[in-house]
Length: 180
Image 1: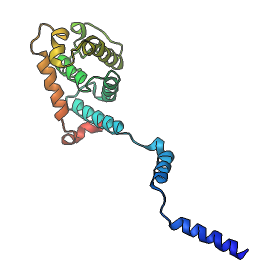
Image 2: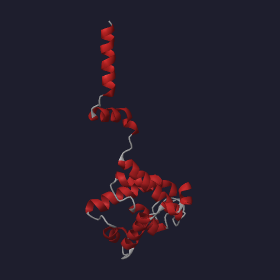
Image 3: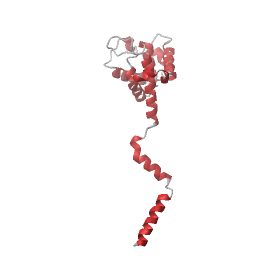
Image 4: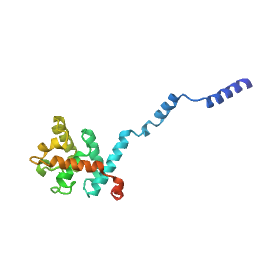
């Protein structure tokens, strides 16, 4: 009996000091913490939301708290996340100059269209940009402009300007904007 116990003890000790297969360790880690694993797209989304929120706050935009919605619908319709916010910059000073209760920061229908809410407007505009513009090859502000905002020759350049400002914006330079 002592011999069996001694063999079991020796086997346990040997098992504890022998190196474990790397594959087994990785599988265990992935399986044990899979729901807690942060995907790279989650990190990117967080960065974009914080950046857009800080940018819109810098302009005192009523759209500041909708930064996550901007990102979500841009991803859903596979358009550049900076496009719709940039359009709001050109058309309504980021939502500050709109017809009362229209939620139309995009100049949609020459500003005469009334949406139900900011969420509704962001979804409708993003979907329309995908289906009526991007799917037809109009995939840059310069190509979109002649159809979206005729007869303006400068609309595409202005939208592109704001897209670049959003891209270059450093939220850390404006820490108060992040407290919203």
